[in-house]
Image 1 (cartoon, rainbow, N blue to C red):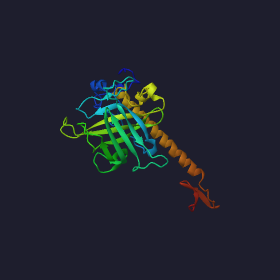
Image 2: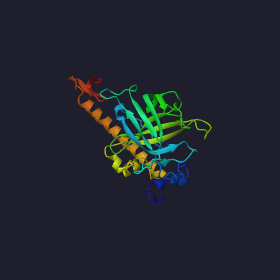
Image 3: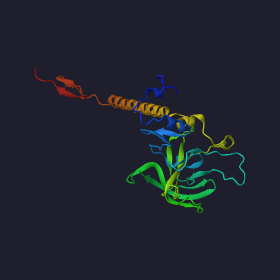
Image 4: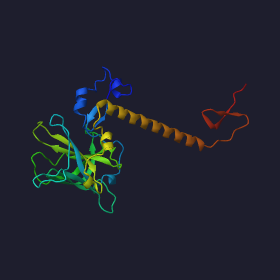
Length: 281
């Protein structure tokens, strides 16, 4: 990316761009990231609520995001020929009851992660960072139990959330938030593990991301590119909302009763349907 190119996001940078550090941008180039007043390495949580049945599927892991200071984020790769002594990355399965409408209470599932296994039953909306308000698209588990003690796992504190970005088939990515009491940080820490919905025949093609999915997730993009894309999307959405609002107003005006005019009346400019008497000359 050329800083001298007027069309380049880098050309708009100045001394006040404290969110942009060329060295950090280079380090995070390959990682998924998004813009939220600054560039954040990770997966953005979905804003608009989604239907629960959209969650129910098997997902394959593709990226992990340790808590800062623990280790670096990294890609998760599925090898076609796995040796018996090696652990497969595993999968996340979210199950809806057959023939019934999915609810928070009747959703179940399994987490398999590099030889570790847990089962859960029921989900509930999680609270925000201040632990005050419930948030959309982030769920804690009603019952969650690891099969055994693996040394860095715990049953409490685990959760899942849906991503703002969707895959090429329109399904949101899902992130499993692994809670660990490991003494690395001296307190409970989290590992976010992103997963993509499995599709028929995907095993033969591999579980990786397409070039389009990587681009939407901010992978292989410098900080200014991530910011520019986010601002462009926000501008487009704002324009679409404005156009939609105008269309609704035009439709409402078109169907508004015209009202009967009296001979000695003029039309109120603010309301064509309401006669207004003339002022005396």
